[in-house]
Image 1 (tube, helix red, strand yellow):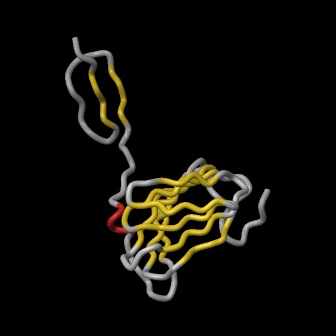
Image 2 (tube, rainbow, N blue to C red; image 1 turned 180 degrees about the vertical axis):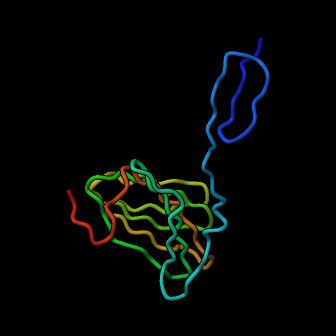
Length: 136
Protein backbone atom coordinates (compact mmCIF):
# COMPACT_ATOMS: atom_id res chain seq x y z
CA UNK A 1 0.00 0.00 0.00
CA UNK A 2 1.47 3.47 -0.89
CA UNK A 3 2.33 5.81 2.00
CA UNK A 4 -0.06 8.60 2.96
CA UNK A 5 1.62 11.92 2.19
CA UNK A 6 0.68 14.97 4.23
CA UNK A 7 1.76 18.26 2.73
CA UNK A 8 2.26 20.99 5.33
CA UNK A 9 -0.43 23.58 4.84
CA UNK A 10 -2.18 21.46 2.24
CA UNK A 11 -4.13 18.28 1.64
CA UNK A 12 -3.10 14.66 1.75
CA UNK A 13 -3.06 11.62 -0.49
CA UNK A 14 -4.35 8.15 0.32
CA UNK A 15 -2.29 5.36 1.81
CA UNK A 16 -0.36 4.80 5.01
CA UNK A 17 1.97 5.23 6.91
CA UNK A 18 2.13 9.04 6.79
CA UNK A 19 5.07 11.09 5.60
CA UNK A 20 5.11 14.85 6.12
CA UNK A 21 6.51 17.06 3.37
CA UNK A 22 7.28 20.68 4.10
CA UNK A 23 7.16 23.50 1.60
CA UNK A 24 10.29 24.21 -0.38
CA UNK A 25 11.55 27.79 -0.36
CA UNK A 26 12.46 28.74 -3.90
CA UNK A 27 13.29 31.87 -5.86
CA UNK A 28 13.36 32.82 -9.52
CA UNK A 29 16.84 34.31 -9.96
CA UNK A 30 15.61 36.51 -12.79
CA UNK A 31 13.77 38.71 -10.30
CA UNK A 32 17.13 39.63 -8.71
CA UNK A 33 18.83 40.63 -11.96
CA UNK A 34 19.18 44.39 -11.98
CA UNK A 35 22.01 46.53 -13.27
CA UNK A 36 23.42 49.81 -12.01
CA UNK A 37 25.90 51.75 -14.11
CA UNK A 38 27.48 53.22 -10.96
CA UNK A 39 28.19 50.01 -9.01
CA UNK A 40 27.77 46.24 -9.01
CA UNK A 41 24.19 45.46 -8.00
CA UNK A 42 23.96 42.90 -5.17
CA UNK A 43 20.77 41.18 -3.97
CA UNK A 44 20.41 38.47 -1.32
CA UNK A 45 18.48 35.46 -2.62
CA UNK A 46 18.50 33.19 0.44
CA UNK A 47 19.93 33.54 3.92
CA UNK A 48 19.79 31.05 6.77
CA UNK A 49 21.85 30.40 9.87
CA UNK A 50 24.08 28.10 7.79
CA UNK A 51 24.07 29.45 4.21
CA UNK A 52 23.91 32.69 2.25
CA UNK A 53 23.26 33.23 -1.47
CA UNK A 54 23.50 36.48 -3.38
CA UNK A 55 23.20 37.54 -7.04
CA UNK A 56 25.76 40.06 -8.28
CA UNK A 57 25.06 41.93 -11.54
CA UNK A 58 27.90 43.65 -13.39
CA UNK A 59 27.77 46.14 -16.22
CA UNK A 60 30.67 46.37 -18.66
CA UNK A 61 34.02 47.18 -16.98
CA UNK A 62 32.69 46.70 -13.42
CA UNK A 63 34.54 44.79 -10.72
CA UNK A 64 33.86 43.62 -7.17
CA UNK A 65 36.51 43.04 -4.52
CA UNK A 66 38.94 42.25 -3.20
CA UNK A 67 36.91 40.81 -0.32
CA UNK A 68 37.52 37.89 2.02
CA UNK A 69 35.92 36.06 4.89
CA UNK A 70 38.05 34.03 7.29
CA UNK A 71 35.21 31.68 8.23
CA UNK A 72 33.26 31.12 4.99
CA UNK A 73 33.89 29.02 1.91
CA UNK A 74 32.13 30.30 -1.21
CA UNK A 75 31.21 29.10 -4.67
CA UNK A 76 30.81 31.52 -7.56
CA UNK A 77 28.60 30.35 -10.46
CA UNK A 78 28.46 32.35 -13.68
CA UNK A 79 24.78 32.59 -14.63
CA UNK A 80 25.36 34.89 -17.64
CA UNK A 81 28.43 36.45 -19.22
CA UNK A 82 32.13 35.88 -18.57
CA UNK A 83 34.27 36.83 -15.59
CA UNK A 84 37.88 36.95 -14.56
CA UNK A 85 38.05 35.64 -11.01
CA UNK A 86 41.07 36.25 -8.81
CA UNK A 87 41.26 33.95 -5.77
CA UNK A 88 44.34 34.45 -3.61
CA UNK A 89 47.24 34.52 -6.09
CA UNK A 90 45.28 32.57 -8.73
CA UNK A 91 43.47 33.94 -11.75
CA UNK A 92 40.91 32.20 -13.98
CA UNK A 93 38.57 33.27 -16.76
CA UNK A 94 35.21 31.51 -16.34
CA UNK A 95 32.14 31.44 -18.56
CA UNK A 96 28.44 30.78 -18.17
CA UNK A 97 27.67 27.66 -16.08
CA UNK A 98 31.25 27.43 -14.79
CA UNK A 99 32.13 27.77 -11.12
CA UNK A 100 35.02 28.90 -8.96
CA UNK A 101 35.70 27.83 -5.37
CA UNK A 102 36.80 30.48 -2.88
CA UNK A 103 38.26 28.82 0.25
CA UNK A 104 37.77 30.57 3.59
CA UNK A 105 40.37 33.26 4.21
CA UNK A 106 41.27 33.79 0.52
CA UNK A 107 40.74 37.19 -1.08
CA UNK A 108 38.47 37.18 -4.12
CA UNK A 109 37.87 39.73 -6.86
CA UNK A 110 35.43 39.37 -9.75
CA UNK A 111 35.76 41.39 -12.98
CA UNK A 112 33.34 41.47 -15.90
CA UNK A 113 35.49 40.08 -18.72
CA UNK A 114 33.27 40.96 -21.68
CA UNK A 115 31.21 43.76 -23.17
CA UNK A 116 28.04 41.89 -22.14
CA UNK A 117 26.46 42.06 -18.68
CA UNK A 118 27.68 39.55 -16.10
CA UNK A 119 25.46 37.78 -13.55
CA UNK A 120 27.08 35.76 -10.74
CA UNK A 121 25.45 33.59 -8.08
CA UNK A 122 27.56 33.66 -4.91
CA UNK A 123 26.84 31.00 -2.27
CA UNK A 124 28.75 31.08 1.05
CA UNK A 125 28.66 28.88 4.12
CA UNK A 126 28.51 29.78 6.86
CA UNK A 127 27.02 33.21 6.10
CA UNK A 128 29.37 36.16 6.55
CA UNK A 129 28.70 38.43 9.52
CA UNK A 130 26.35 41.36 8.77
CA UNK A 131 28.07 44.49 7.47
CA UNK A 132 29.49 46.49 10.35
CA UNK A 133 29.28 43.56 12.80
CA UNK A 134 32.35 42.53 14.70
CA UNK A 135 33.78 39.14 13.72
CA UNK A 136 33.53 36.47 16.47
